Image 1 (cartoon, one colour):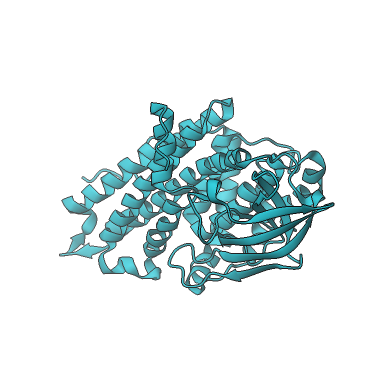
Image 2: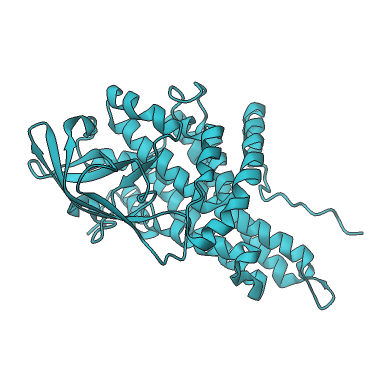
Length: 394
């Protein structure tokens, strides 16, 4: 007699490390995401459009305030809970999870960490409520991994204003964001500073990047800044150099590791469910040895990923996580994710390349997750410097 199948992708039960209250809240959010966000996801991805109905759901859930309790519901969530929230959002749809992450992690994180109290009080309440949506402008058309030392966007102070000139590329939410954190090099002291550019400022223009094969619902934009005048009040007062920018990225890079886990987990679940229902030669393909091998390799990757991101969240909670920990987690999990989605797509055969079976979307989206927040190679060099004391950056 066949044994009942273990269908839990969290094979070692990492979610059990959450408190009862956290599991209850996560279950509530999971149900809302599946009821209200999932029905929008595939059609929006296919049309490469952002479904603004999702903003209403995110606002209702209050998720933008989870990391900033004084502007949210006053309840501080642990990094471990926020990690599981990212996992759930990415299992439903990586594109909408990224759009939310750009707003809450990169944009709000920059304003909260880089702004003074007056600036936080000015912008954070509207951003928590999703009345104003944020974006983060760092990457440039001619600069990605080397942007720290080669930033071409400039800022020149003229009295109580700053004049910004330059261009940014791949800016998520960039076509519709109300507030865009722009990083620019001060012509006077050559240091990188942060500025909150409002979408209606003269000289600021955004155009959608077309033809993407991954995260298609995310509205990535090319931004141009032509003599954009930004008041001194919009310069983030606690940003003095690129190291301050890197602190924001170190926090969000850990979230990308959870995102990779969410993508891999959903691809595995789709593959497992398909394997037990799809029949070939008169029997479910899940009974074939080669299919079971693919599934177990995926589950092994996912379990290892769970262990790393869970420990990273614990270290974030006690203040011992460093940029090298986040870099290793991002590098490792995105590599394992890439393997998982490829094996899942392989298991589906020809059905794996059409959106109807959904795995094609996760297979494609994984390529973007693998690339952003620092490539595997750049994150490897961050860890390499940490463990050898020698910098291999050129």
